[in-house]
Image 1 (tube, rainbow, N blue to C red):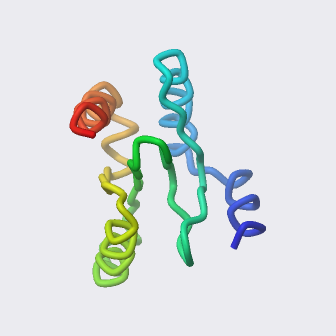
Image 2 (cartoon, one colour; image 1 turned 45 degrees about the vertical axis):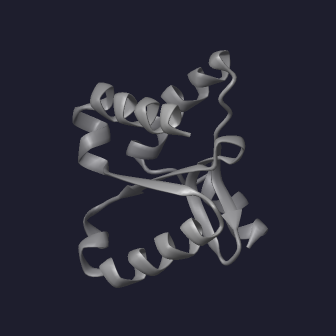
Amino acid sequence: MLHRAGELRHELTPAEKKLWLYLRAMREDGIRFRRQHAIGQYIADFCAPRKKLIIELDGSQHLNQQDRDEERTTYLQSQGYKVIRFWNNDVMNDIEGVIRSIQFALEEK
């Protein structure tokens, strides 16, 4: 799983690349995200382990795998994580709104 996570770090989608730039900037505030972070049998798109927050980005392929996504979310929540999801389109067209939502989720923790 760790090997696959490493591979995925080099294969980011355009939306993942864009969001990663913003998440890395949060380091100045002491919030550290990891990309393609392995948790159990799953690889989270982005994870702030100390804040127990996972961010998942969904493309159109997720329309056909809602059951699988729900199972994944349930597992991650059982491990103490809060999981928030955004569509790739939201990241590409409304990054400010996405970042506000992430900041709100961080404040809840």
